[in-house]
Length: 364
Ligand SMILES: Nc1ncnc2c1ncn2[C@@H]1O[C@H](COP(=O)(O)OP(=O)(O)OP(=O)(O)O)[C@@H](O)[C@H]1O
Ligand SMILES: [Mg+2]
Image (tube, rainbow, N blue to C red):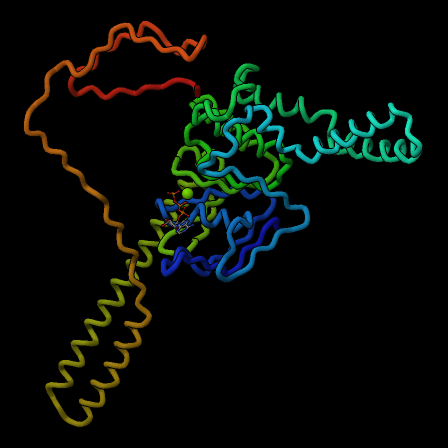
């Protein structure tokens, strides 16, 4: 049973065709890497799958059991809310039930006339609350955040002051708690520190549902995917296997297309030679032969599939007129705090000409 089926999707923005004729199926246990250059339409495809945007043509269908979870590429919503309450929004319907229950409890304390009716309603709502995990939702939210490296203080911080990586983790936590069985992850490793990327790799490797992940990180993709979809020249091509497997299939395909192209071109040259010869003889019979050979050339040219041209890469050259000094920057006992929160102190650095420095550290 397939979880999701997309057929013949087309999408343009104004006169810009982003993609056309895209079809694929996602089965249980599919772990798909979606790759393609910047601006090729990967995020747009996700937005069609989630229903945030409509395709210009084509259909998307999901099975009844499919629950989508979406981790977006760029998000900033309510920046005042705390990290913990943001994660709790996943359980909004449960929290609303809880509020209703509290309301009924208050009413019951006043010994109203319709007490039997209220008690019956209370029992009904309470059953639903328990059945959908109302008793455990808060501890689940907290456990997910702890697992992603948030301590209690950080859980209480407003989203607005969180680092990029912490915001990413918050989104991950929400998606994982939503009970989804088909995850759409748009560059999930962006901004994550090394420990969290490893955590995510482990999580996805053992995840029992399916996912499509957009990433430009081939090492990450190689570890977690078993299919690869490539968005290129407005089309989506489906490959078996992870990123490395995709690369070698693509090389083979390109080689086969190139060989066929070269052979057809040779054949066209050969027939053109015959045409020239026949024309020289210039009898009626020869002219007829030349015409039929020309038709043959037309037919061959129509079947000719050009190998994809290599995309132009950009070259920069920052020529230097005057050589700089050897000491580029020096810092002397730098310190920074936000309120009582000390970020760092006694930072002494000397940066010399030509050094290339890797600055690492956990998120936040
Ligand atoms: N709402 C929109 N209106 C007009 N153009 C858009 C809109 N959304 C995206 N585009 C354009 O569509 C193209 C595809 O964008 P998309 O965000 O899907 O690319 P992407 O493959 O996800 O790229 P990246 O790897 O940089 O994230 C881009 O040229 C983009 O500028
Ligand atoms: Mg994108």
